[in-house]
Length: 373
Ligand code: MG
Image: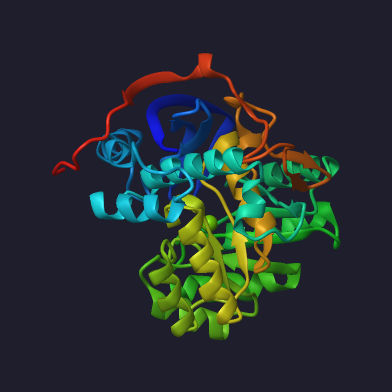
């Protein structure tokens, strides 16, 4: 049993509306899609969504990294996902998005070979996971109107992007709380936009509007600032950009620099590394959220499998596919009353990739020497 062929594609995914966070505005994503095929014709799919400002990878660097990674995994046993991960880490440092695309495809293929869901390969804990819906930065009135619509759709949690201007940020939270009432959870995410002083001011003022947690208030590399806020803020602090890898998670829990850690498969570079972050967090008494970049249905479905498999994951922010004008996948993770559900079938499930939407970039069919890069 061996991986016989790797195909790499790009797909352009426009959003329904421009999305603004403290780091900038975007209105589409070009994701990289990977298709693995084994010598019996079984297929696994993976996806990477570039987040240049957070991870430092673009669609072009992901494709370039995959040109080095794909020949290294051809010929490997598709059941040996951990060995595939090790091989990829030896070929090239970092490049977590590129590795994620190949690793998700490996898990999908392994699940299909064994006839079990990825959720069951990773642990198995629950069948559905709550997700919030994220509202990008706009005027307080616009954000309140959008929040109303979201609650009507059945979501029980809303994430508000903030981090631009403390006074306005507090107004944003107030406006949303006023329209959604007390039963809906409100989280905020400043995406590193505040200084420590601004964060303390904002969080102290927001506390009266019952904010559940505040994501990444200050710069990703300011762990001392994160630790100070974790001690001083009335609202619990979640590390997002500060934790990419298991090593980052270890540092954050040692320094007590967060009350929660947001795991994203793209930052971690795979489900196996995400599982190690969850293990470190759990041992330190720090719960996890599973978040996403602007991912389509393959990657989001992988995130739902991970969240459904993992006890330390207490909530999710797996909503990006809902914000796309049109996904390239049919039948991925479902959405009902604010919960994500898993599709039927082994691996990631019986999802259908609309191959006509994909732009083929390259194919590797021969086992290759690992070349310098
Ligand atoms: Mg975040």
